Amino acid sequence: MKKKIVALLLAATMVLGLAACGNNSNSGSTTEASGEKTYNIGILIFNYANDYINYVRQGIEKEANALGVKFQSSDAANNQPTQTEQVDTVLAKGVDGLCVALVESTAASTIIEKVQPKNTPVVFVNKQPSPEILNTYDKCWFVGCATKMPGVQQMEMILDDFQSGALPDKNGDGILQYVIIKGENGHENSEQRLVGYSEVLKARGLADSYDKYPGFLDLQVGLWSTQNGKDLMDAWVSKYGDQIEVVISQNDAMAFGAIESIKASSYKIGIYGINALEQALEKIEAGEMTGTVMTDMIKEGKITMDVLYNALKGETDITKGIDATYEKENKCFRVDTVPIRLSNINDAWYMYR
Image (cartoon, rainbow, N blue to C red; front, side, top):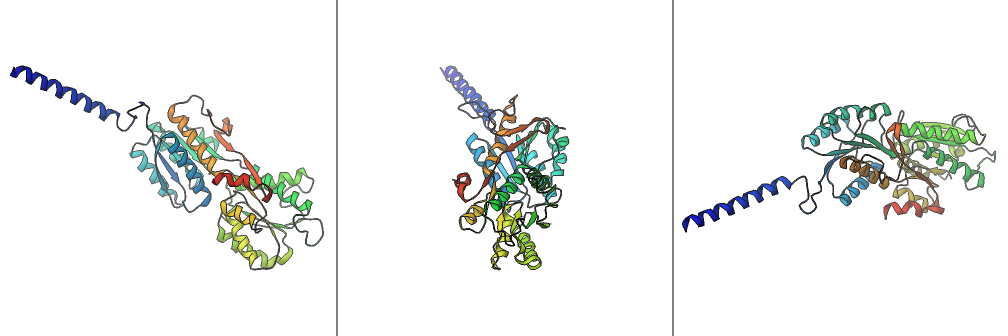
């Protein structure tokens, strides 16, 4: 009798032990109910203080939650060495993949060198590495808004408004007098937006390039900053007075600075930005800003996460379910942009609702 009791106790102990081992093997990588892998990723952002990239981050995190992907987000505070260290940290923790908004686009090669030996997929967003760098690793891609199109749409919108009389022709010469606040020298978005300006002017027979148009007054770099936009506008108002008819800003943030400067004068100047930030939409509704170009930041983040998720699942077609143009040779997904005025402002508000 005692032998039977001992045998039963041993059997029960073995069953419990096997169950415990089974639970340990499943905790971490799979869900107990479905057996599907639970992925853990790192989201590395160049600067939380940047409004645009913060909306992109929200899009990534929202989609990660929807897909059941665990994540940890890090702010590099605009310091590339800090971001590089953050890559080392999350890789040491064994993440399955990375979404990276680079501080410096040239740092992509360093990050690829770190993830490649671990076979860890990475999707870069916002600042585009060169296609040559992206093509050194089969598990990396880039997601961003169209580079030239925002410039094309911004200049078309401005010229259409000027020709329709929606913008003032202060001296009655039929020529638009404008200044340009450029984002950043060497930044692909900045340079391609200038190309877009030139192409529109040339297509309409007005000039061969943006700086050859008779109404071009000046171009300065604002580094995407509201304060820099204000400082540049202060200097231009002092130099040109009421001669300026339009400010062409390569993002909304710099346009906000220009608006702040213009408020201190009695001048009426058209202000156009790019991004369709919430504050920009509010300023258009208040009559302080004339137009912007919507770069769907939330969608940009969503697509970044969706591309990474396809890679994590081992999809043979990385474009599966992705609502964006794919440039295969550049390993690049492009999110379309939309010109926004007061008349279609609800098309932009939907991003935030």
